Amino acid sequence: MGIDDYLKTRRQSVRELADELGVTRQTVYNWIRGIYQPHFTHVVRLVRISDGRITKPRRRGRQNNKVQNMFHAAADLLRRKDDAAEGTHAGA
Image 1 (spheres, rainbow, N blue to C red):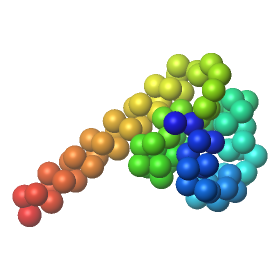
Image 2: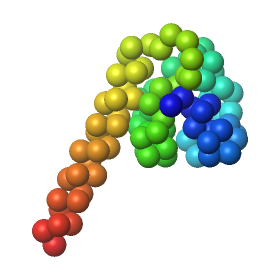
Image 3: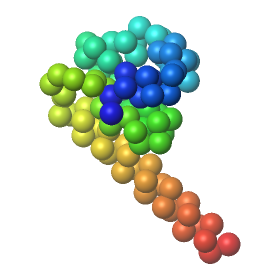
Image 4: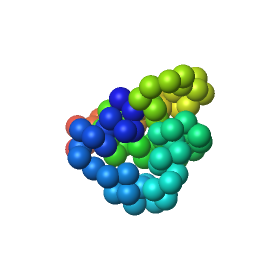
């Protein structure tokens, strides 16, 4: 799911997401339009905020493989972190 689809399903504005990420509204629009690609730290935050539902910046069009890989890496990183936290709590 792209950022724009996520915002529609959540009925959230670009401004609200931008505020949550600490970036400008224009930055989020530029990611959606494919003008710029988000930095890995923003990808991690997008994946975290969306509970893994955002898997790419754009809904349509050609996706940059590097950015696509960043979204997958961020999702894997967060999944491993959650698994490790659950393992820590399970032994308590």
